[in-house]
Figure (cartoon, helix red, strand yellow):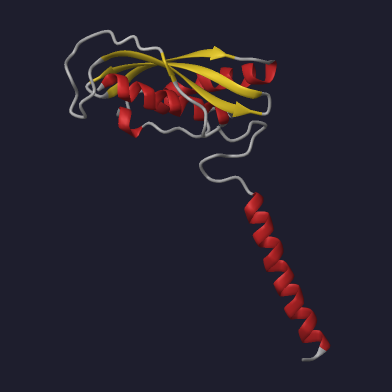
Length: 157
């Protein structure tokens, strides 16, 4: 092989290797990179059930009412908690409230942004459709929110 061909092949292989390395560092489509980190798989939901309202069920089998749960997620500052309250009517979210539980100013900022934008993402959607990723610049709070939604689904059955 000629030296110029070897250099071209080497450069091509090195470029592919670099592209693979960079691709491995890129944030996934579901969890965009921010100052927060991935939610912990070991994080547990603490259900604070307050099932109020009608016992009439929806087509999906969820009872109408208002349900609450806390969800946990990992941030660079440790485990964080976010409170979620959903009101269901015929299996559809008609209202959402977020209770912020920040442990530091950075968490306060992200949970506040999340709380300000979550209604646009979930109100009017079926409970089974809800799975948020990044809301108003906050990606990790979504992990705690989604965890709380799973607990609420179990309560509403």
